[in-house]
Image (cartoon, rainbow, N blue to C red; front, side, top):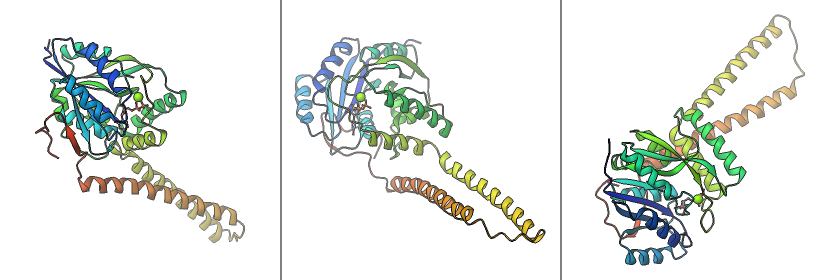
Length: 320
Ligand code: UDP
Ligand code: MG
């Protein structure tokens, strides 16, 4: 199969990326603006407060290939990405970060794969420059835990940098859940997916918009939106403790009734088991609460984002 690419969209969510925006624009146009396809850059301003909005308008005036969508406030990376995917019009769509950590040159290779018939080409990091050992280690551990919990072979070392066919983007657009873990959703959609190894660069400018707390929340969203295994683990733990309790009841009943053992000592064991099991129960009730809270959020069915203004027309696609 050899598909011809007529239009390409590059979707970039960004929060306070005024420093990187001009660099990003130059780089994208230099690398991807000369192909046989029509280029469209869709920058989603995720409630920035650093003057990104003015830069967007300026860039759009200068070059109509640069389009933007401004959200009414900060909705978070995953929702901003969703907005960009909803608005873009290309036949193939690339999602990437604003900080040029994902080199646009790699997109050319992704396009070649798409032309050969692959529907999703996701970037897999061969190396991660400019990232701390802590981030690398926690990321590696996370994908392993995630795979174990969800039973879904989510590829390790991949982020949101990928090229998707229009069919995939449209299908993805139908998934409007609140707890969003886009890389998992793309994986869930299916079609023909392939990895492409690349070297991740350090940030071009500015600082990370994902401090540790935000990162942890995102990681937890990923687990709870794709797996109910933590609940099942709680059930199994409860069952184990119950079996243990039954055994102890039998042992102590026999000692008391048959051997007439008077068991006065044992206060320590009693006290420790009360606080131990109390703690375990609280933990599992909390876990249950996490899922209930997620149901609560889904049931409200609020829109995933609100748009303040955009240079593109509001898409007729996924109805909010
Ligand atoms: N981002 C966003 N909204 C947010 C947080 C981040 O749109 O609330 C964007 C950010 O501007 C960048 C991308 O998400 O384009 C990835 O963030 P960043 O590069 O800061 O994360 P890191 O690579 O350090 O994990
Ligand atoms: Mg980054």
